[in-house]
Length: 481
Image: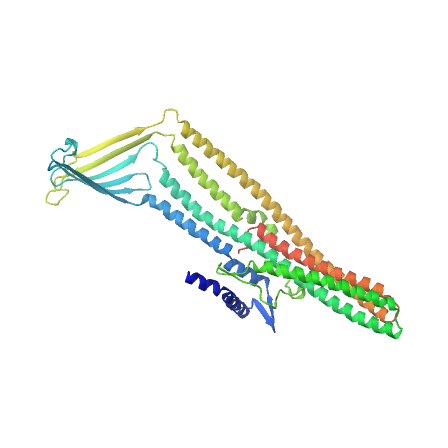
């Protein structure tokens, strides 16, 4: 309890310290850039933290441990086994019997079981078949399945399935990371969008306030109509409202961004004050890689989700083979060589004529259970194959759609960048005409509104482009690479 209280009381301090350590580490590696009190949090730095520190990312790593543990467990089916059985009976001051039997069993991959044992029995009322020499008897034997379990048995089936499961955990890990990085990446670009829109409205509010003061002064001097001050004041109020909404969106997006920031999957972090994303002008241009088109089918076939389905089908095939094997009768041949030790030498009195052997046979008459299990195994394989085909078609569509959106939004971004410049030139020209008395405040506000809308639309297009890039990597299952 003291330890728990200590952790709780120091959580806030730990969050500050660990976040500071992350910031310093990322700055030193060039992932973050710092200017005075402003820390620029890049997309790559953010995604790296999510990939290595988020609880879901830690959960993804546990999948590998599950695969290793499952494989180790299945290998236990082939572990040699030491056994012993001691049984004695005493009554009326007599030893009725004393039975001692123990040995070692060694299962092998081929279904054959090796056996070494020792038996020593004595007593006044001992069953004659249990009689042994005073020094006991040694056994060395073998059990061979001739019918069922000759080519595959439950232990071999489980081991093969465990090996496939271990490989499938790599795909499961990639799927989990792909999902969490995709969700986290979209949140980052929403934060980026909200911040840059705030900058737009902060700038326009400042311009509106400056224009209001200028119009107010001009009206006082009689150079402008008094009604112009009312219109200029309304624009200031509208800009304030737009800025407040943009700031609210930024605060909410910052809170959501913090949800994905952790230390070792245990300590949640918060965005430090003064942390901002990159500005639009500082973003590097990301071109669409040709390999996405030329190797689309190959990239899709390597998607971890499809790989996982293939592993599942392979496991079902092994299960089907084991179910089919159970249609055979159980026919086991057992042979044990017997030797009596003489002066501690087991082979001194060995004779090939001393042995025990046995034959075990069993088989259901109608095999309804076995035939039913085999039919279910076939159905399960067909279901998995249909799911695989459906998922592959869906992933191919999503990949092509994201590539198209990536390419289209890139063209729109390039085109609309020039459109924004044109709107700015129109606004600057209208300002000059307004200052010369050749334009109205209405026209200036109209040009400014168009310029603001164009800037916001450009930010929206750019974010769509980056999200399309993110979706493309997600559709190909390579976000964690």
